[in-house]
Image 1: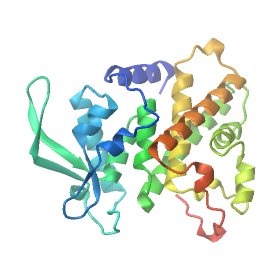
Image 2: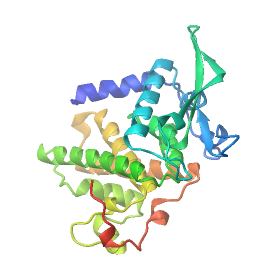
Image 3: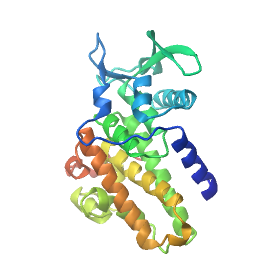
Image 4: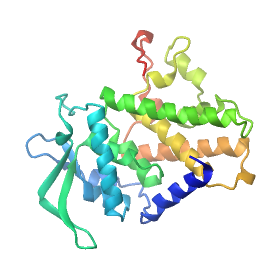
Length: 282
C-alpha cells in the first residue's frame, strides 16, 4: 500500500470512532465481561465491545466480526478447556438481546468468545490506545497453537515491512535495527542477541519462534503502531533517530496497555527454559 493510501486508510478508521481515552485504573473490557451460565467461560457482547471501542459505524464493526469468524475457522480454535469447537461456538447470535441502529435496523447482538474477541480487535489496523488495551487484554491466556501461528505470521508481515524499508534505503537503517528497537522497548533495553542468550537459543533461531502469544502480540502491536505513526508524519522530518524513537515510544504505549489490562510484562513472561528442539516453523 502506498503512503497516500495508507494515510487514507488510517484517517478512515479514525473517522468512524469517537475519541476514547484510557483510564489507568479501569479496564473497560473486564467490566463488560460476562460468564456463560453453563460453562462459566467468559464472553463479551459485540455491541458492548463496539461501544467501548468508540466505533460509531455498525456496518464497519460487522465486517470485523465477519473477519473474526473466518479467523476462528481458519486457525481451528478450541475452547479454553481444550475441547474442539466450530466457529458457531465462538460467535453466537443471542436472539434475546436485540440491537437497534440509529437508522432503525434491528438485529440480535452477538456473544463472542475470548479468541473471537481477540480476532475482532486485531482486525483494527489503526492502533489507538483503547485498541492496544484490548489487544493486551484479550490475548491473555490464549495459548492455542492457532493463535500463535496467526501472530507469528503477523510478525513476519511486519518484518517484511522492515526489509522493504532497508531495500529502498530509507532512513539509512539496517534490517536488525527495527526488531532490536522493538525488543529494547519491550524488554528493558535487551536486543535480539541478548534475548537469544537468555533464552538459550541456538544459531539461526529467533525469539519470535518461542515467544508466548502475549509477547508476540506486544511485538506486533508495537510494530504496527510505530509503522502507522510514521506513515502520517511529514517525510521531511523523518530520519533514522526519529524512526527509532517512534518505535521506542510505541513500545512504551504497549507496555502501559499491558499494565492496565492486568497482564504480565514481556520481561516477566519470557521463558528462559526453552528447548531448542521445540522450534516450530511456519
